[in-house]
Image 1 (cartoon, each protein chain N blue to C red):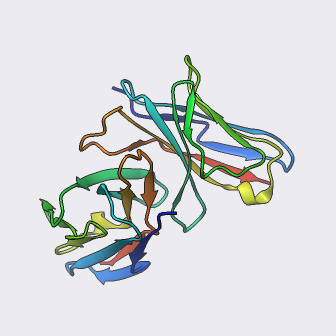
Image 2: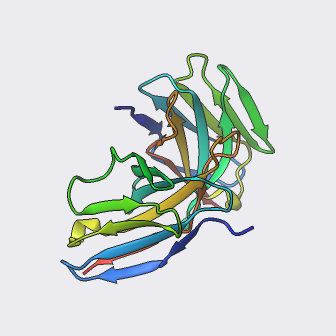
Length: 111
Length: 115
């Protein structure tokens, strides 16, 4: 079945530094979505990417979808303490409503 | 517009008891998904339902676990004869028929502890 891997598993950064997490799917995807889960909280939808090579920005967050639609990345510029949490990518196959979540990257910020 | 409602938030069961987890999707959402999250791990897909239909249960353990989404009322995830390994956070999510760019909306989860 479809597998979605993320690296790194953990990332500790100084406040103000940049952060990147990478996501790879074993299959070509219809779309990829990103979610953020705060400690003790539930996943919250951030964005969906659909087109090959697509790049979307949300303030300090930049999301990319690879040309082959099998990989994606999330980059945060100048991290803040509010960015703490686990970031999950989630892939959706063609003709399938089910989302397969990646393993997640847990971001901690050193003030 | 209330979000996805899950209850209870916390549930403690002794080994061998039954656990019933409830999920009411967002208004206007017809698709419900259940995911399980073990401590410090990712979200594992369990089951996808529409009203009165199980669409995909490929992530459900073959025994003791069942799910339903009746015509009236919330979706129910039932775990019979719970064991310690069932301790986890169970999240329900919902989406409209055509997701568009909305993604899933998750509930706050039910934290199940088996003692």
